[in-house]
Length: 121
Length: 107
Image 1 (spheres, each protein chain N blue to C red):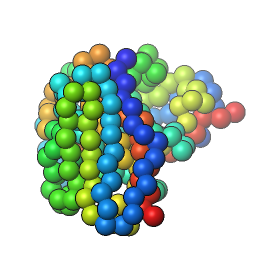
Image 2: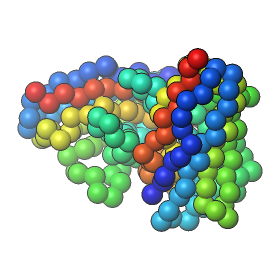
Image 3: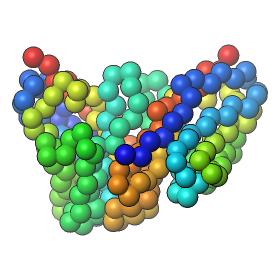
Image 4: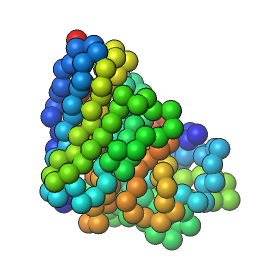
């Protein structure tokens, strides 16, 4: 199970931090991602971090503004979002990689319920 | 960047077969994954590695992938299968790529 928190309203240029608590699986053994979905739109992958936390990769749309991190001692995934834009308005899902610890070809087999982020003045 | 294209909508009668395509350059050279997202819910993985079923997924869902097109087939479609469906693949430059999504309507 995955449980996100930390969504809310932010002004353009502002910051928000999302958290995701993991339950029921060996958290450190799997890569984790954030995936977002703008209102009425499709799925967009945002960022991924390897099981050990040493490798991270970002979508071009958020690179340099968002930072993904994890605390394996607390089974928690985070997404620090800075310099927010109205186009970042979306529901953000925490998603578990199905098979890989490192970054690579894989699916998402567990999803959280999502955290809503609204960026508006 | 790598792109995956799906038809915006597919309509099917109950009990009939729904076919959803996903197109991308040399898609058959990589694995394709499929997700179902019902209204107001989180996505659910229904097919992985082109044609494998995750635990708990009905056998009426099947997948294939060859050339530039992957296909999700829903046999004996039920009203509960009405949802948005997304394909997904991995690209070494773009990482995780989702398709544009297909809304399946069971008439």
